[in-house]
Amino acid sequence: MQTIRLEDIRGLRVTVMGLGLNGGGVASARFFAEHGARVTVTDTKDGMALADSVAALSTYDIRYVLGRHDEADFSGADLVIKNPAVRPDNQYLRLAKSVETDLSLFLRFCPSRIAAVTGSKGKSTTATALAWMLGKSGIKAFLGGNITVSPLGFLDEARPQDVVVLELSSWQLGDLKGKGALKPGVATLTRIVPDHLDRYGTMEAYVADKRLIYADQNDQDWTVYDIDDPYGRSFAAETRARKLAYGHELPAGVFGISIPDGRSACVATLPGLKSMELVPSTLLVPGAHNRRNIAAAAISAWTCGADPHAIAAAAMTFTGVEHRLEPIRERRGVRWYNDSAATVPEATRAAVEAFEEPVVLITGGTDKKLEFEVARAAYRMAAGLVLLAGTGTDKIRAMLEADSVGYRGPFDDIGKAVAEAARMARPGSVAVLSPGCTSFGMFKNEFDRGRSYKAAVAALPD
Image 1 (cartoon, rainbow, N blue to C red):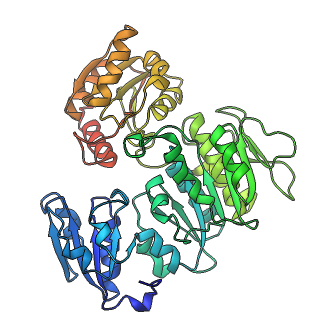
Image 2: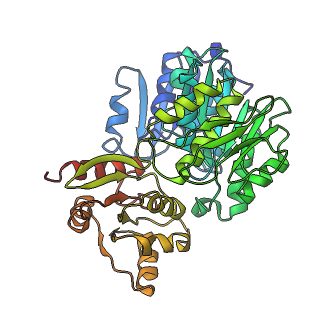
Image 3: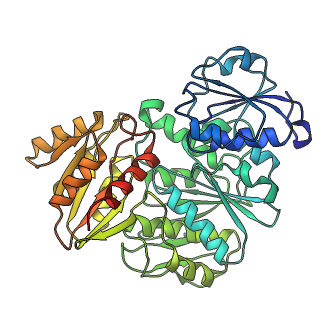
């Protein structure tokens, strides 16, 4: 079918493939139902697993096919909206006349400026900090995408003078390939590390989807990249947009922001401006990796027109993102943190290194064909290790035993793991859930894992 317009939606037969648990499918189904489409929602999960998502749509006339897919719902639809987790070569999608995603349609309909953020880890923090800085600078900003907020939910509110900050996963970017829908005014890329190799097979295939974030930019746009990362430097060499770097030390003639270490202020040198402190030395979020993320957000905010002084003030008050080194409580002299979104070993290493205090680390889970060598020193550095059960944990255990590093577990119950960590932690230490693995098996997703962890920590007696 030809490019769809908002006024074309009424009466269309729309199949939403993948209702899911994180809101994307719900937002798509709601959007099309509200615009007069005849909506079918289909998901291989059954009604019990999707009860909350179905309840959120109870006021709409929607047809559900749950626990299976039927070919007729794809071949007979005018439009199929796919969940990013569904592989593009899925057998049912091959039957569809037209396949889109919530993001591809949003980008076609949205009148606002787009600031897009991707990377392996840090993209949620960077995107959230960017939206925060824009808001504190007086620029109305919306935040959506992979951060579990479908932008279709705020499409009707977005105006040309606003900025929509989109966190984009590699899967979401891959779904946009060839559609000509994504042309962000600023494309921000965080550090690239191995991830999702169970789906991609190779780093080259994984990074190829990341490169799509700037593929349709021109010389009026901006690409923000990590100059300390070889992939970041390759992005800078490839993009047609103007470039801003962030990193430990910027070469002469390179505009961007320097990050000398994990505790010092970050000074930016930007076109037409004197060098200035854009990220203060004192931040509310812990860790050198978070300082890097905030620095990337700061220069990205500047490209959107934010005032540099307002950016610096906003950086000081940014409190972080749920499930990303999120402070939970202090109990008996021990501070507890939730880093459930740490789904690669590099993120676990960063979590342990973020604290000067001794760390009791809860880690492990399901493998996605990653190597854990990068976190080996962090496991040795931890004051105590508590393992969650899973195929990734099997790899970790082999490494720990080779290094004669003690551990407790593995536990197949988060409450038991938390109780064990509480017994091990001493006053003045911190306890952190930072799995370095996916959540599947024990939990629905990393957000379910984080919520379960927080509930278990809250249940500890004072």
